[in-house]
Amino acid sequence: METVLLEKLKEGRGSKQLVCFPYLGGYAGSFQGLAEELPDDVEVWAFNPPGHGRGGGEPLEHIEPMLQLYYEALLDVIKPGCLLFGHSLGGIVAYFTAERLLAGEHPHAATFRLVLSACNPPYECGETRYHELPDDRLIDQLISYGGLPEELVRERELLGYFLPVIHADFKVLYSSSTLNHAPLAVPAYYLWGERDRTVSLSSAIGWVRYFANEIQLIPIKDGSHMFVMYQPAVVADHLARLLAQTSR
Image 1 (tube, rainbow, N blue to C red):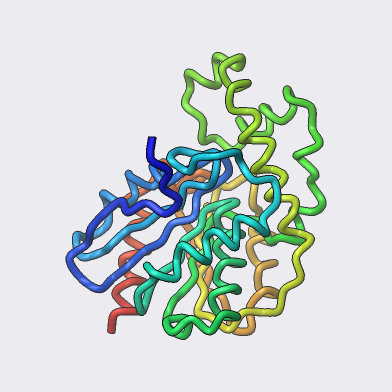
Image 2: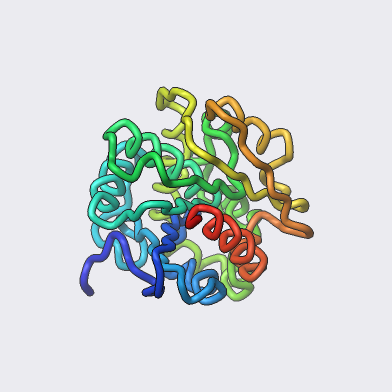
């Protein structure tokens, strides 16, 4: 299979562009349902982290090399007014990728916006140390997010096949807490599920320290942690509205 780090999910018939950063264990195809709900004038890209989907190679265990790969992949793709969207772990990766785009003085850096979704702030990720859990408890933690197919939940032995990727992703999550940061001056939004048992409202609000300007909170009614999977039409509606703003 051909290795594809940054995969185009939808062509789009206009100048609007969305780039998606996957959640823990996710890959580009995880956003296919969301892409199908977006208007036809939106071009949609999504990342396959190494070791996930078509990403190829071994899964990474630290966020730094992931950020460099993503930054380099975006340089030839990103358009003016691009919306960077990251869910759960992807939100943290999107944030630090945006930081690199701004530091690198990319010509479109002043025009893109950032949408975080269902993600704890990095400083909290250093407190959990999920990557140190034994396999059984790590699987329990993964199941608690509510994004696994029922057949996998019932057949826990099958989950063992994915454990190397899951362990690596939890290490990436933990490593995000070790990065230095300066508050970003970029328009930012936060999608928060009202029934998210993983990310509390206070955790969502904790992201304010990571931005130089206000971050707009957008509640997702009845949204669990994986609302991007279960309510793609709702998420797509919010993203389409934000994309319409950036295209003016």
